Image (tube, rainbow, N blue to C red; front, side, top):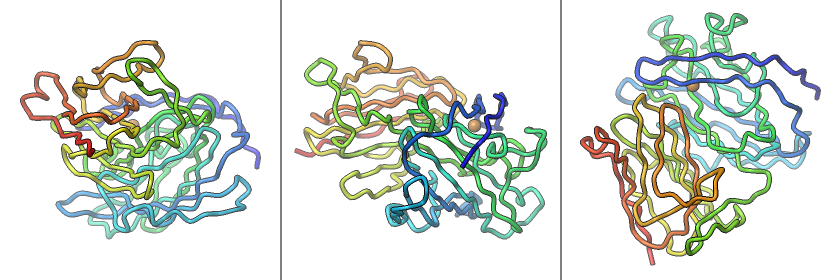
Length: 322
Ligand SMILES: [Cu+2]
């Protein structure tokens, strides 16, 4: 398949509760190798007046569709907050069909979308309304699903949020539960870990668990991925994270609030991305992210030490089982 490059477009979205800066990247190039992730997400109503994304169908195949494997069962079979974590690798492509699967009480509920950060896509996959993109409403509606296409081009490795942009307001309903994450693993399949104080490159295959922690302005909300069972489990508010001693585990922090947060994991140091330093704390502003891997050696308490976050008790246990 051929895809034309689109010109770079910059848009920004401001939420009632959160804001984010979004760069809609042009296709730097077509992915040269990798896998195709064919995903069907549903958006449904959720307890408490919230909304949630759910994984309806997920197959991974070669880019031409061959050798397809169904991995839907890795995910809960009901919609969840946070939404499903999509795990891909640089070089992969994603087609994501979103299905509007709830009765609407008002016209404000007729549009729902997926707007992603970090990966590349054409403007028709922006997941915004014509009001913002000057082109068209890129929504699933009660009448029609909508398909988005993303390319995890070289350089997109990282962990990125996705969220609705069109339900209720043109800023979306991220604050009503419609958000999730995309993990783009590096094509090298290598991550750096602190080994006895020095930086060591290890295979991603050695990472036994991934913890995705969304940092809101009053709490962490998490999802835990067990890479032995491949199961994704929503872990709730300020979740207790567990690891087996001496295994590598990876933290993915995504700040979704408007405050500046100061994440720390006492007794642990991790290689700072882009430098040779070892650090144990990181400031995260709105929509910033942090991905690091540690070797689980002792119990700790991950904490947001920013002043107001401390007052709100933003912390959770990291328990290492011998
Ligand atoms: Cu955004």
